[in-house]
Length: 401
Image (cartoon, rainbow, N blue to C red; front, side, top):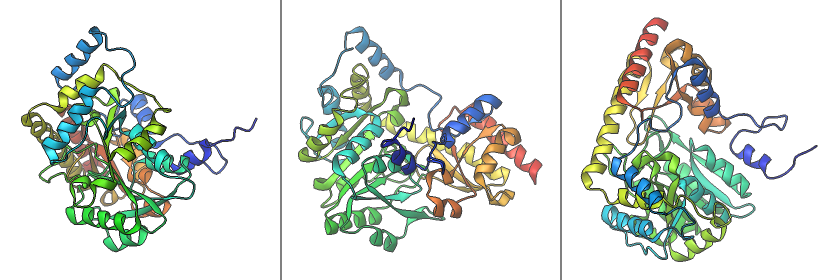
């Protein structure tokens, strides 16, 4: 039996459709399975191995015990929508109407999917930076959009402004940016964000910005696009509690946007998950109201973890690109004699007892070839795990040279 349908273009958009029409497993699944079978330290997938703050976990338990186990309101519980609005005001000076301009979603991924499915149609173009999170390509294809990319250029993983100008045209419906950026750890500078706003106005495009790492920056400010002049009325800002509070499995995300855009997105979102995570919503609301010391502390702790792993990679002989934000560090294996990072990642469990992900998994064919020796490693792990991984990588590097 032939199974036709939109799954094929979705898989193709994510780079997972083989020439024979079958779906390949993702490199993430392959590397996680390899870590499991070999006992290697899994620095491939970006999830923490420590729970979030005790008061947030306790709030979820109390919500369950208190009976918050049925469908929440379609827009999200008022307590969370109000906390999101207060968060945007507190950290960025943005005035957001909690009743009309906030939508709670099943993680940032659903916010992204609902937004793209709602706002693009057959043949509309969506511009992203490359490397890109694989869900971007998949959902753009599912919505029958056309995916255009602008490469992030070495050594700083920043876009060339002329290439960005060339990519955005009157056919562009959405400019989708991930800032801070996964997998490179780049925090886009103000001048790039201002150019994006300028191009959105020039070509009547909507800006969609994925900001899940907003509180995990190291010595650089996070600048939400919506704070820039002329951006607020045409920007959908997406974030979530997973990365900030080490609760990635709770899948509590949200978006903020002008009321008319939220209404359009809700028309699609209500037929995806409908609603989700009732007892987790008040817990994340509590988290968003934690004192400044908490938010400063999580960034400081993560920066120290970044430095532990980066030092081990450097001792192993990798060229290390120091990230400004996020969960991941990119390292170049070329100095070790490896031009194929995918092949190296399959050998690393035996060589060093560590798993990473090739950056080529986040790229189309052309940039994948250019970045073929680059590997992404996650440092959102316990300090002792990172210290062990760093020592194993350094030792393996000495042995291979």
